[in-house]
Image 1 (cartoon, rainbow, N blue to C red):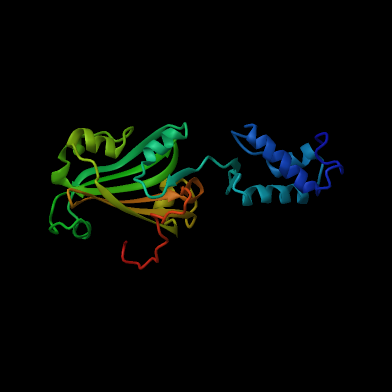
Image 2 (image 1 turned 120 degrees about the vertical axis):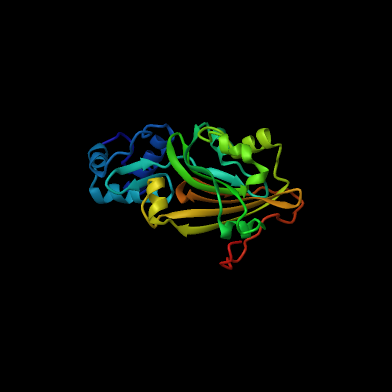
Length: 258
């Protein structure tokens, strides 16, 4: 038993005392590699398995640890928070969190796609630039990203290695283009089997599907659909006094693709 953790002086239930101590140990980085099993915790704290499970269950509910079927429990990595009302770079967000952004490029190609061309306001047989990536944060899969744009705006992008660079950085440096406005809609959904395998999570796990459209010189520039792990993604809004009208809205999902 750890001294002072499970005594009766605090007025809290034993499982609450254990939960508080585990929170402290998590904050100090003790379980960065792997969270201990229930059996180990029973031995450390000298309590029943039921008591340990109650404490661990509460840690899960608070989002501090994540259980992976067949692999055990792990400290929940830091979430990447998207500010509302601004253009958002996942690449820069990962860097800002002190982690290493990398991508596994699955496709970087010229394509024709009638449905995508319609979204971009182009002829159905218009040549398109298509980029598909698995986005990594410290080599852990975070998102699967599809980017489409008219090929005539960025043919130089076909030569770019997007493994360790941001799309907008290359768009600006090679093509002289910066998006002038954009609209982004995020929906909570359950991940399909193919995307789940790419993200290393269970099929049906919660994810966000983030759809973005941008414009340049009043013409459609980009259509992007990104599926982000629900356990690694959050939204952040800021406002000041006096009260200002919000720039973001909760929109009904009409099923029309935004």
